[in-house]
Length: 463
Image (cartoon, rainbow, N blue to C red):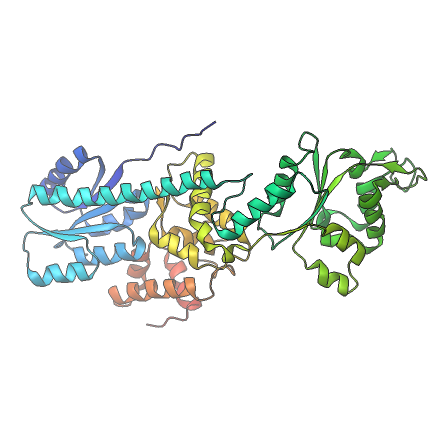
């Protein structure tokens, strides 16, 4: 069944002018175009409400008390580089127009307004917003088309992997799935089971890294009553319980060496013995083992039985890390954002081009799991309709469960200098724009004064 994304909100326009007549005039033109219009009478009020409004475009008067339009423009470019800014003035000049465009303004309007030109500029903003949303919808649609048993991949490596799973699933009884943490090894195991002859039977999973060593044998093969202290009832092990189906051993490299001989016999002959019993039982089970370790090297070092390794690796399927399939990131991003937005009932449609560029540059040692968690955190922390570069950077920098942007250093998943360089540039520009006034710089950056001090100290910035 197709699920609908929460309907996207209207585009938002923030008008900043100390003349009420101008505010009413702009609202008169903008509302029929589909804008949700917000008005502020000063640059300081506008910057204070920027985070709450999250405007797509700001129309700001050049000549205002305290903060000029250029000051507001520069502050907006620091806080939200994706937001478009249009300056307006009753005293136009060539020099001012050049300064405005150099500072990042979309355009420069003279008062009284040329209605056609104002409408054209607002339509440019709307068209760009719609274009980006269409791109994200296209990526999301393609992600659905590319999905294979819960996995998404357009890259040659993933297409080759999907083809291997299709061909092997009907025939294999033992498979070793290898790859780094977070690459999706369990999804491969589920695909092999779903496409194999045992799909109508159960698939059981044992996370080998989560089992106490002296309970491994009981978990896998069961025990009889009284076999050891605490064995008050007879227990059926996973091999018997999965009879006729599939047993998935996650983190198989953690299997105790002493247990591996019994595991080999169970896989080879389907023979199991419950702890404390002499009776041999038979269990017809397909075994899929997954690991992020190099079992060949573990075998050579004597930490894993070579005969069990060779038995498990009759067929080996390797999952590439995300950094080796970067062409899949846009489609994974679209799918993860859509899933998070749907779960949170948020009208988030995707990410900006700058945010997508940042996602492409990260190394992602946690692979798909890390990418999904960062995007989910960004969806929780941001109330934007399209996640910006700042939203993604904040989600990367913040620890799980925290929306504090300024406290932690860059997460190890990011290129070591990536976030610190961006933050340094932002802080230095804010300090220069406010002539070293830390209170004003903190307000411009949208953080507390205490947070700014921590930034200054961590980034080793002096005036």
